[in-house]
Image 1 (cartoon, rainbow, N blue to C red):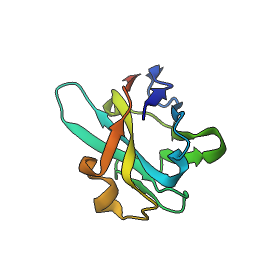
Image 2 (cartoon, one colour; image 1 turned 90 degrees about the horizontal axis):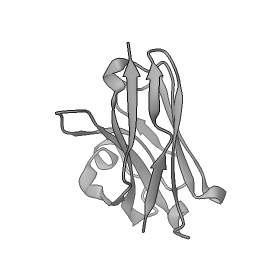
Image 3 (cartoon, rainbow, N blue to C red; image 1 turned 90 degrees about the vertical axis):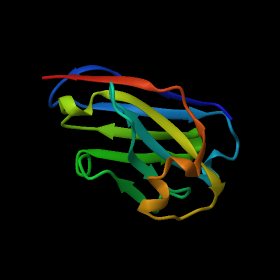
Length: 129
């Protein structure tokens, strides 16, 4: 399974970006998807997740209200709409597919990177002040 993350770029504080995570996997819609990020010199952190049918979404506190995760199952794509970007959002953003199908889950479940088994290559988001 290959995930392709795209949409990153260089923006100014307050701007918006939309990241996309797409795959050719036919059963992609059966799995939850998460977005994680890694800032320079820091560890990977959870950003947002959406379960397999879109009924449950979770966000890191610092992005809640600014970021929105969604999915278009017909296009095998998960989006991360990022608004009011801040310099501290600067990071490489990775999408990942959950390892178990049809999971509703909870914040502790989806924020744990060990519950994902396929990862995209990352897309760089740089926010200047």
